[in-house]
Amino acid sequence: MKNVLVLMHDDAGQEARFQAALDLARGLEGHLRCVDIAMVPAYVGDYVEFGGGAALLADEQTREAANRVRMEGRLKTEDVPYDWVDATGFARECLRDATALADIVVLNRALDKIAYPDMRDLICDTILRTGKPIVAVPEGMIGFDLYGHAVVAWDGSRAAEAALQAAVPLLKHAGTVTILVVDEGALRLSATEAAEYLARHGIRPEVQTVPKTDTVAGAILAKVEAVRAAYLVMGGFGHSRLLEAAFGGVTRRMLAESPVALVMAH
Image (cartoon, rainbow, N blue to C red; front, side):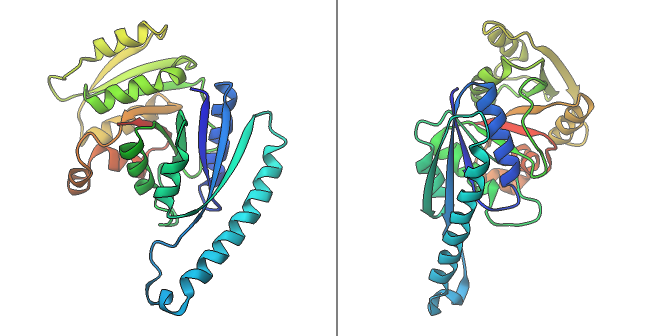
């Protein structure tokens, strides 16, 4: 895992993404690729009919050009090899195109104060359409603690399996690894099998099973807080996006509430 891609865009989550991506690139001795997207407005209503869409896009391009100057000035003082890609268009398509040859993509889990860009939508699209693992950081988080306590949320699903395998290069650096099972009965793959898989990579995790309290997501959040986890590894969208939306799935809640970075794959 040497190629770290980070979304650069002048919004409330950029600083968290930037700092996490720097820490990952340093810790993994990798290369940082910054993709700065001047985003076409998703919807501007009747304003488009009067040329307003073009004006909004021009403003966005001007803002992102200034953002590049500002952020590249900071990058040049960091001991991290990087390159910078400018893109203009719809956020999902531009990000999807930029992920070619990326090993991991850094986004926000959600932006608490603004609805656009829609980070949950970007994460959904990127995971499901590219298969790339995502690091989704809270808006207010500064840095990514590669050496702290990592928690792996395990339900035996194929999504959890994909996330575990994708996270191995990160877990090798973790000071402690806990495989967390929320007791819901028989699993397709047991936590013991997951632990044995990690052990073959030189990682010695502890397996913990906790009872389901109010919800699975609630039990995971409580454990993450109790052990002061640095980050949480979990499968993203174990069911269809439609079902997740209809029933308020674990992925949906973690993207809304997780206090720590999420490492996700599908």
